Image (cartoon, rainbow, N blue to C red; front, side, top):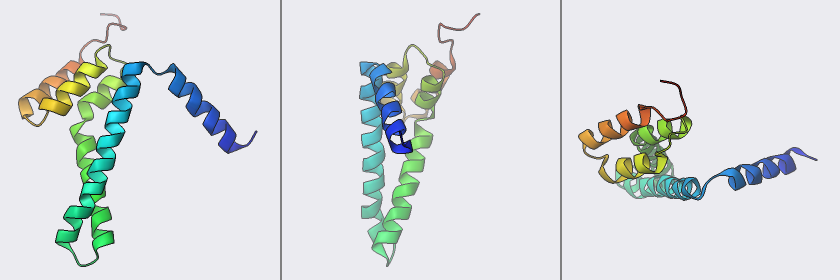
Length: 117
């Protein structure tokens, strides 16, 4: 079995073990990353002569900014927080206000229910 086959098998195992909510959040997050990258091409064409290169740079910057914006969700996911979907929704919908982003960050760092007091 080659590397590609092992990788595909592992991806299928991970996808089967992921909950329905986790799959939905992963699809939404991936869609937002793609949209952030593609929107960079539109903004990049306004900023420079070389549209393709500037669009790729601006798109990459947009993805980095979106990823920084989603830090509370990434922490909740990594810590296997029981309210990952709630943290994601709060951060995505209201995180633009600094107060909601801080609340989502604190929520993601709260006890997960799996760790001792």
